[in-house]
Image 1 (cartoon, rainbow, N blue to C red):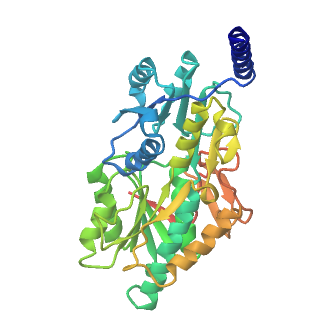
Image 2 (tube, rainbow, N blue to C red):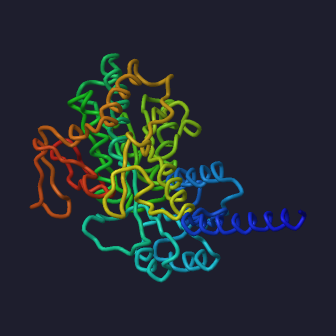
Image 3 (tube, rainbow, N blue to C red):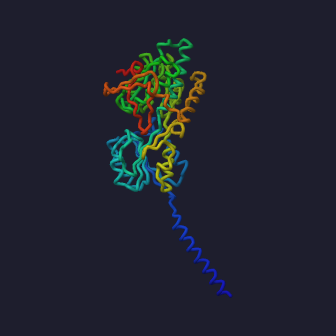
Length: 397
């Protein structure tokens, strides 16, 4: 009898082992217990752009805890990208994120086919053939720029109504790094947001020709203020313009609209509102894809352009933060919310549209008429609008 029970038990055990083997064969485990992730920053977290990007790293640590190991390299110039990239690859990173604009990443990716390389887009990727393990991404920043422009426009309108400035003093200043399409697209959307509230508003743009110089950016903002600008914004990478506004606000009303990082701590009296690209949705989605051996573009939610992805308010890739309730005009939040809802519903063709013409600063024969709407980020995550609007935007020295 005992032999019968033993034989039956062994038979069942063998059948169980066979069943488990067959199940594993038909349903292989693809998930990873841990993942090694690399980040290469063009600057460090003391600057708004890199600080904002590093929030995605913080989100990963919060989401995955001990299941991820994160390695970072900071202050990496574009031309110096190769060494830290190879170092992170040698250390076993499964996926590496870059916020710099070096083409080296795309060129080196084929040498490491088992690693996914994800870079913030730096050029028009539509129609380009790229390595299978190379991906680009960017939030549709023009949406946030336009909405923050509404907040600025509401403030200017209030200043006119209260007699602080005249109608013809509705002047916006913008501290810009370079005349790239990304920068031009951003400041144009910002002004068009302002003009949706104050149709006579104009803009003066000052280029610093560097992404990160506190002294140059602050000096450029000071000159714009001295030239009569009552709102200052920027597409550069230090707090210099915000400090310039805060210092002068003790003598005259000047307000600052931020990008990437709230300036409410360094400019509590003059900071009005901030728009930012939210990198977290893409980074979290890409890591989830690699963790589960899936294609990134089949996991991340956004507007897919091959291996390039963009998105705006509808997928949480763009955000408005830190509206200064002590400084903003009444009704500002409601006005911004109404436009954000339009973006979330896919209504985007009203931004770059109106009775405007624009000229390419590098080729005067290249012009645009915005009576026919221009759709930004339609086929690529990198902004391509590169026309300076005639008569309403002036580039100053």
